[in-house]
Length: 351
Image 1 (cartoon, helix red, strand yellow):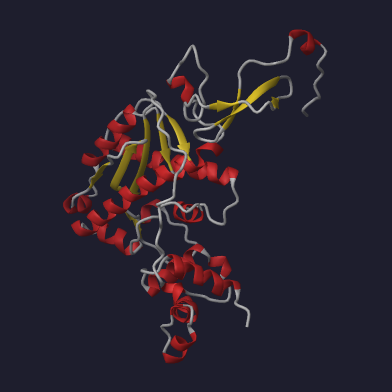
Image 2 (cartoon, rainbow, N blue to C red):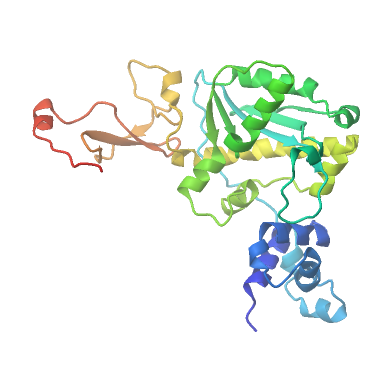
């Protein structure tokens, strides 16, 4: 009998998340794929109908029928032969990779589906629980977390100053969904804690560029890294962990920080893997101004190759090149068209 699409989806989740408890995994599957389960009205249905069946936890008969034991075997990641484009080029650019974790909102509501919650219904607003950041190519990860007492007071003023200082030094900031989440959230905490804006920096939002360039089924960091065979996120119990942190559990806050730090480490690998596809990438050549050699605008390398192919705009022709270090492509700034050729060049009307 052919397997349904829902069954195949659950099998994939069971294979990827072998350590998640059944109900937690069912909730994760349901929340991320609500439209795929129109006939099932709750997480409990998925737990009974699919997850338990796949894992062989539905009694002796189901256990006997579950022959594929790999569905709940731990998936090991082998980094032995993994060699991304990550040659370090000496530049003056301070490239910061960051990620933050925030406490959930607590609000009064009359239901759980499609609710319009008024500001007056909010009991406790969000605040920053932990943050982690590292400079590109450096091993050290900078981080901070609230104490249990600070979390109970919703007071993140102490840890916010540390990430402000790093952002103030940064020339380029890399974050996954940074433009809509991490950076606006940090700016909110900065002004609430009476801090001035940090000095300007450029942003690279890996989520934005992944959406723009690729057609992955999911653009979540963990899913993309799975497809690209990159290091994966650290497992956690989901929302219960955030609730424990909100309630001031010091052990949970330590676990949250470990999770946060690992996210920053794997984000660096994601960035290095996709940086050739980032268009436009902040021009790294501006941080290594050189009068004798041309440099890759994506990574700053001088290992450039001219393939003899030309890049044409509506009015000019430029020589193209590719970088042997990061794999990106670019063009020269000087046009190959002469003034006489331009005189006779006509252009179509764009609208």
